[in-house]
Image 1 (cartoon, one colour):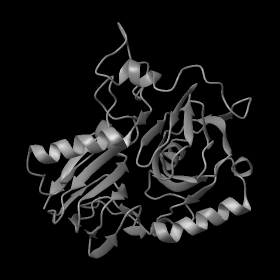
Image 2 (cartoon, one colour; image 1 turned 30 degrees about the vertical axis):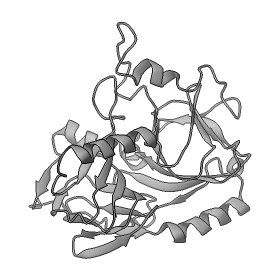
Image 3 (cartoon, helix red, strand yellow; image 1 turned 45 degrees about the horizontal axis):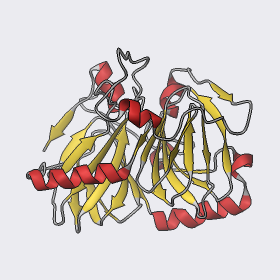
Image 4 (tube, helix red, strand yellow; image 1 turned 90 degrees about the vertical axis):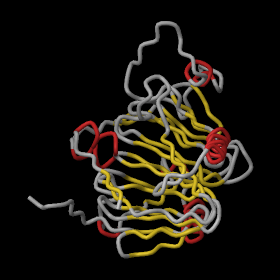
Length: 312
């Protein structure tokens, strides 16, 4: 047995200014309907041919143009959407729509019908994160198309927030699954919380001010297979080195800085994306006030009792 984790995954960074023109070119070449989902896959250079960013996670950038609809379907894989650019599109989950705005975090749970549409006037791009490699490992993948292109709206927008997202629950509510009943987490509220916490006390020496997105019905992770986090690094922050067993994908929401991952240093700016493989030492520095979104397979590792973190 190896004394420590060994992974073929390597640290990597994708510059948004490089990826965006390619994604818009794809928009000119193929419609969302033809592609079903128009996505540029972020493939880890150490996993060539696997269409995955870590051994257990998939990541990609998806584009939907004004007037387009990405048809309704469902699948066993759990998915998250983190809006990178644009406003006016929507995601519908099991009959309820949520408007998509920059840096909103949206969940499309396992085996829920979902579709995307853009009735707005500008392209909308978001980061997709799914547990596709994990589900493939278990040979547990299922998928199904909805009979119509778009599912009917059976609840008004904001219904889930009213029922589950106001520190209240319906009378005698019993969660039917471990997935969050709230599928949209607006960045406006998240950013306000980070700002308040910044004023409340000093940042963590490694993570700055870091919070995890939560299932309001259970207090657990939003999905049983994927954890998502948001963190604020104050201007001038120089983080302590740390490492953990969950390979983690990062998206830069605001700010500029750099991350040292293993022996490599990656400079990043707004909308750039990077990956920190399992058990790689990492430290973050912020040239200006920075917000980072990230996701990993931590819930699965914790459920199996194998997750480990170390401050260095």
